Length: 320
Image 1 (cartoon, rainbow, N blue to C red):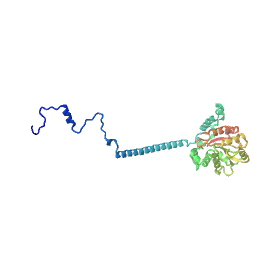
Image 2 (image 1 turned 90 degrees about the horizontal axis):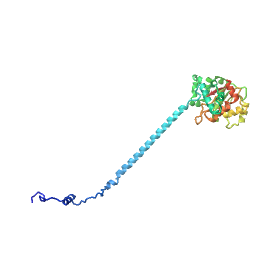
Image 3 (image 1 turned 60 degrees about the vertical axis):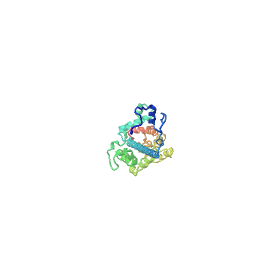
Image 4 (image 1 turned 120 degrees about the vertical axis):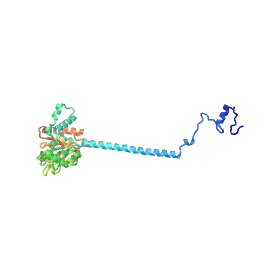
């Protein structure tokens, strides 16, 4: 046997059994196809993995909160923007129109109150634009009180109504200013009838119109006429005993006094002011509230004597 060689004979040929035994080696067994190798460490998460997962969940929750906060801020900004746009739209009063447009406006309101009347009958109730005013033609006038056009801005009118009334009377209605400073010779015969939509508004306007700047030292009293806290008989007694320069009231009470009593005398009446700049909590003016609209048009402006005075040119309708 040669040194350094292998122990196999030169003509030795290994059979399949010997070859297989040599490949397997000692201590190894062949695995079946169904045998599965499982790494226990890979199957059970480590403490580091659990910590990392908890951290990721916390970061996701924080991100979600931030996202919701940003969305809420966007919604708030959108609501504020929409509110600002709405306020800007409703600032201008209906009164900020020339007489012919005001006549059309009143005519459109009459249709809502007199739904059963024909076009010809409605035309008989129509107030001509020549007898409607709002100070529109005097908007360029200015003095210490400011331009007449300023009181068409709702915010200014509500915050400075005394000044607005002064502006209206001194520039647009000079004849009313003169008459307010005079005392009527007849009890219960106002020169101005001011129609407001609610008792609280009547009380506010009454205090304003009692200002000496408007009626001077000799002007007649200012009657406060609304149903709340006052019976109709009380107002009848007051009017029959008092020289009144201005009658401020709700359309419901004024309508009853005109149509059911003789206490409200129209012999000295020259102006009727419709308080349409003021809005209620639902942003509606005197002629946009169905109840007060119907009372104004059916019981006040539709009174035979008053309507005749308007059409004869003795009484002027003013939208304020």
